[in-house]
Image 1 (spheres, rainbow, N blue to C red):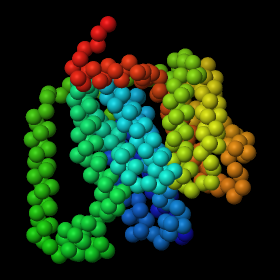
Image 2 (cartoon, rainbow, N blue to C red):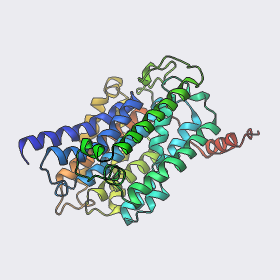
Image 3 (cartoon, helix red, strand yellow):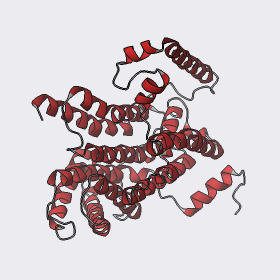
Image 4 (cartoon, rainbow, N blue to C red):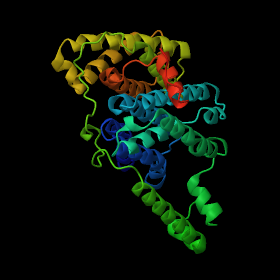
Length: 381
């Protein structure tokens, strides 16, 4: 890898690591930016470098980074959202997809990606768009559920089929099937092959934008001025990380979240660790992190600094990783892959611990209340 190639590679990976952190405060622009860099990264490498992506197993890192930014989006829901039904639906969609991806990584059976579509991502974008000017609590449970169902059926199922079953590339489809050119042609040459089709595509885009403007103008009056900053929304959630909480609060969910995430990471990055070993290791790490979190909370100054909490947690996780050499095989261990796993794991755990208490615990009664609300059946005493 030349110096230029290494620089470009490092910049792209840095963007994929840093941009998702903005989702916590700037949900809509940050998640769209994460989507764009996710879609463009391999094209950037292919057109500007001589890097052999297969040699680096970049596809595995790509999958891991996808789960990473979606995990941060999930954490952002209980940092920012105030609609109980929306938070509950988001949690259901997130864990449903996470289970599906885990099963796919373990079996490589592609239909699982259609059975467990990534509806959470676009549902998050929908809610982030709503929250630009409107109080999300004004959305009824029925409206929120209908939006999630519509995204699932009309957007994600066709998209998952296109990507994972048909395995079609959008760029090649447009250039070859619609414009009658070749996939390697420039966009200017491709549009010049069938100018009538290119003109029709432009008309469709303009028409779609016009419809969007009309719909936007017909929306209810705004509850507050347009803002992309979640902290500028009136009555935004105030998260006080110094509040005393028991070390076990949310521990079960955190173990589930991190276990599934690490299994996906390990499979995508082609490590040889057994699933049961990873699960045991994660349980030890997460429980230890929870104890550390409780200890840090005794010192308000230590915990209110996310950087300090991250640093302390990272040091602990590295120590545990070294100490768990018996559980996680050290023979032929890839320290670079281990470093990536520990970094992403520590970021997710730190953010989860910082904002988890803002959501509160979801219970079976919450699910029943949502179902009753969707069916317009008030809860009886």
